[in-house]
Image (tube, rainbow, N blue to C red):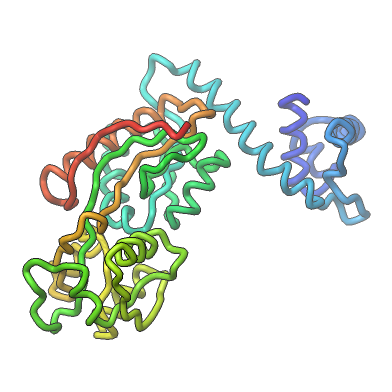
Length: 313
């Protein structure tokens, strides 16, 4: 299998027909058809369904397309890394951020990257931590900030900080205890994410250790909707203080730290062990680490700086 075959395959996928693809790829249509047929023969599967209307991917073809994109992207980045090794970092970097982390650092990272490394083409993708972990392993992301420092096969994790979780309540709620404990929560009506959500698992595990059953009146997976529900008086919730900084400053929500060692989560910077990081990615890792450390030191991101390195092998 050759890289040019993968490029031809991708070109046919994008064009939808051999005729259209041959013009874009500057290769004769019969020769292009032979290359696609040879690729299918080597793989032992049909990548396309042929018809008078063009070429449509089979199920096998759709799976192969995702891998082909990763291989071609890695090849291009390898070439750029060597070509510009001593020069200013440049090229694409895809960064994944969970929603609560994105609220705190997405804009600062973009601003700092533009100021220090204007030739880096930064793309930020926001999603649940679980999705980001999967996409990182697949090669769709170059790096990601994730929750949890447990071992993940194939991932290198740099622990940045440990952040506390806090009770988040409407501004008109009764005064919260100065030293809020888990047992105080059993009397409260709570709005929490579903049980499959990483944050909810931390909460449920901590409560199970204490034999505490919470009164969950609604389950909402959207962070924005959870905050709106709390502000409207539906109930209280449990979040990291960094995710409600603006609402607290505006008087729309109030927070109280929960005095329980298990009600904390670690934020890590993760990359894929089997995929060499480019010069641009390494530069963004260093920039992100520097930026987050400064935010923790100034109190802009409540938490404890860690700065360890943990391998996911």
